[in-house]
Every structure is written in structure tokens, then in C-alpha cells.
Image (cartoon, rainbow, N blue to C red):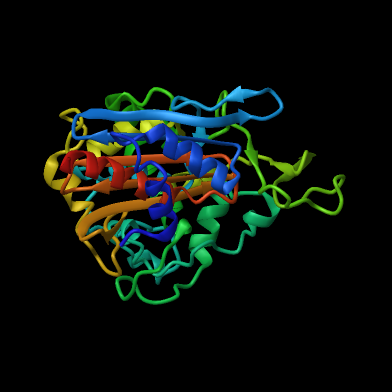
Length: 357
């Protein structure tokens, strides 16, 4: 069922003779008071829409476009899952193999499949406090944590979202390939998909600025905290911090245009040779609590969809894949208060309605 906000946005374009994607973007950005937003809608092999609204940088008056780079947040997990499955296809890894020989005895029994499906038993964040300090662990610190940590529950018992689990997959990838995670992701996923503006770990060149919500000001401009920078009008800038060993979980950067290429591939309309079809489809087989491998499986308007949110450095994103219609939607925004999932649903409804007409 469409949310009230999505229904409102659709009603605003009901007088148009055809769906107006750009008008929906403008209305959504104004409704949520977001500096800038970009979106891409794909339909099977084609791009149905690529556009943006507002500013990537308020001070520089730089416009947002579908080619503007933003941090992808936890959409990084989708990319990491594709990379891991490539290594499975190559015989360098197996989904059933245990992944963390360096870990605490309980954690050493975790399989790669359990890490991908958030069924490892590992905690969500560890004891690093990076969301408050902006100090993210390096590889050595991550391995120390895995060596000492005890599990919340035995592997495979229940689904519990874990950024630490995906950071551990980065370690697994580096051991299997002999190169840094970001290099492996670039060479094995981004390059063959034509994602030329994407990277596995920031800082990113030419990236959009990130902002706090309008009116949410700090009491003391001279003492920023939790990655919040200087005051700019009725907002604050959000400062970027290198995600380091956590990059496989939420540290990648991309553009709406590049993520549209990823969406087409995930729906089965991408270039051959990136990942064999049975492994790609395995990503969308629920393993518990609606989680596949690197992505969430859900129902929307009576159809099966796959989706994932992203949030990092005040950049928010959403990937939405509709298997029945072959439509993929990507939305990226540069403010903490953005809810790109709502816009993604509205754009999907418009695109699916256009097919029905």
C-alpha cells in the first residue's frame, strides 16, 4: 500500500498527461526541505529517467545532477555482496566456508553466507563509538575486536543487522584477492559495470556537501561534535570521516547514474560476465527476516521487491528493485533528514503506472 506522502506526491502530478519524474523530485525536495537530491529510474535495459533537484553545495551554488558523487552509505553492502559472490564463482571462496579464523572461537565458526545475510551473531557496531567520535577502526583494530568479541547468539540462529559483519567481509575479500578491498571492488564490480565515478572508500573527489536538517543548530558553533561542522544559515555542514575498515559496510561513494547501472545489473539487465545468473539470483533468496545476501526482500503494492537504505556523512540513499516490472529506482540526497525510500516508492509507482497505461 502506498504511504500517504507517496499518494500526495502522485496526486500532485495527476493532471499531467504522462508521469513527470522531475516534478516529483522538486516536490519531494521542497516537502522535506532538502538542499539537493538526485534520482535514476531504469526499466529493463533502458534509463527511463535521470535527474536532480537543488544544490550539491550551497556555498558554491553548485547544482546537483544525476552524475554528482555522494556517499552511498549501506548501499555499500550490496556492492560488497556482489564482489564476494564473484569470488565464490571464481572458486576463491565458498558460501559455506568459515570466514574468520582470526576471531574469538565462537566467531570463528561464522560462514560467509551468514555474514552476507546478517545471521552471524556479531553485534551491529562493536565498541568503537565511531558515530560519535568520527574515528573509525583500521584493519588491525577490527581484527583485535573480532579476536576478543563474543557473539550475541550462535551463527545462523537469528537475523541481526551487523556493520561489523560486513567489515569482516572486507577482510575476507582482501585475504582472497591479495589487494585492498577498494581496489578489488573497483576492478571486479565497478569497472565491468561502467560505474566510472564510484569508489569503495572515500574521501571522494568532487563529492556533494552534506548538511544537517534545516533549523537543527548546535548551541556552540566553536565546538562541533559527531562530525558536525560549521554553521551555514539555518543548517550545519556535516564533516566526512574516512570509514577505513568499515568501508565494506558503509564507506563507498557513487552517483545516481552509476547506481542505476548497478540496479539494471541486479535485475538481470546488465553486461554479461559480471556475475553468473544463479549467483545473482541467490542474492534475492530470503535467509530469514526478509534478508537475502546483501539486500532486503519485501512486498510493495502486491509485488516482490528488493531494497536497501544508505546513510553516511549526512548523505542518504535508497535502492529499490521491482522484479515483476523490471524497474529499478535509485535516490540520493545530501541531508540527514531526507527519506529517499518514500521518493523511490513514488518514482516506482509512476514508472509502473506508465507501463500499465
